[in-house]
Image 1 (cartoon, rainbow, N blue to C red):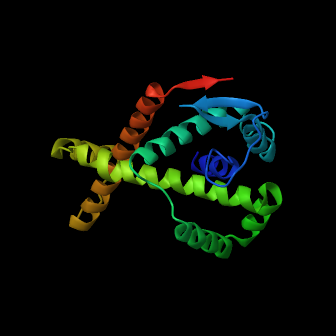
Image 2: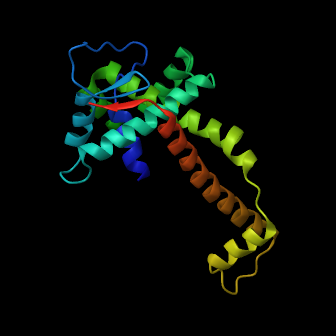
Length: 196
């Protein structure tokens, strides 16, 4: 599922991110708190994947989810400077040259840049929410941790302090991810969403 989200984030272009111009006549698939998700963006992602891999409704649902998170990030003051964007673009180009070149061919340079910015804003907002909202609220009891250890079926493996710390972190990450998804669902429920 993570690869799909990454692919969708790169594929969704021009979601009111600075520097992208979209004609008003373009069909809108949905609006989220007044911000459009354009039909061509959805179709572009669906058409790039093997047939049956993902359908339009899944792409639209994930697009709405991501835009709600990015809008929340704006409320927290999360943005990207031009310097951060330039650095990201250089790193991306250096690490993923083939994908970068394919992205330029498919979306054009402006589209690729905006897609990367969108993806990065989503990731920054998610991390902010985890670090400042979700994880501080998690209260893990020793009993819950012991049950988690039993559920992992570690068998006869001796659990030393280092191993226990790794397992605790894994447990915390699982709870944090679940809580994050619940928080995003609440944000979606509170958002003004119109499917066109």
